[in-house]
Image (tube, rainbow, N blue to C red):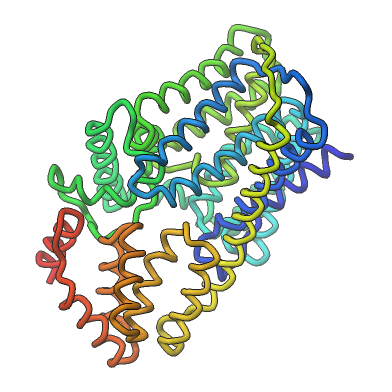
Length: 454
């Protein structure tokens, strides 16, 4: 019963979705922080004098530690810190699956069934808000379904319901590269990631840097949309190299090797399902970013946890656990709550249908709740200009936006000027673009793009 309760919580976290949230993954990540907090509380309340850590756990810890260390030179350490929090949640699920492997197939089965029901009922792409994300989750969770007693019946039930919404199943295929415009867009992002890695091959650019830096690498190729905030390279392997370098990629490869060593032993049905899920995730990672989406990242982390059981262990002295784990759990809880509050507040912003000052006030409140979020940093400047705030306020907001991706902020202002319902607000946006002309290594690609499409 406890295993089913844990599986139910995981499935609920994977499918949690509120349509007003601009980032459909924020609530999912916030709910996935709680297993990490529970694990931290367990060690904090009763820390062992000696903790036996195996090589796989040590490698996973080292990878997360390297990602956190890379924030020292990251071009956007705030965005990188969000990645560290998400990585800590995945690490907790990795450890959890090693001790309670039976939870994984149950959570996958419940998740598929619930996604099918949600998709047939209220829609919202099965609780993911994106057809690609739903299709990727279904593909990675499918190998676990058949392990359950009623797995085949459940799979048939889910397929029958999803057939009524064919767009959910076709989303990943249509948007994943079969359409030429999508393929061209992905090739641009992949080329930028390769050039980014070539500039810092060993250490990488730092976690969270990709979205800020990729317009700088537009000289070697033609960006299909220099104003775009990509958020990801749409290839997890290349983005891992670009942000964490050969050091991070080597640690990730070592962790994968510990999992693949299972092939040389006796495989259980659960082992085979985990290997199949990881293989599907690896293929998806060539054109998408399953390791940055909560549901698919959880499946990958837990599959790695199951496959790396039985690796040689060694004792480690842990006198600092009473301080380290509570501090980590407080940080995760604080960020999860603040990020959710920020999403709820920003959901009140309607740039087209509400007074510009109200939009700025709501955005400022959301930014103060979560100053790490790059989208809130963009929109703080955007709404300050639209509300025609004083020059000092706009300058401070512009400095905040510059820490995210200034090319995207200017692009948003240009789009807002073209689509603003209030001509006074539209004029304010145009005046700001004239006051701060597009220039500099980050903004020049956008300037050329705008001149070509004027």
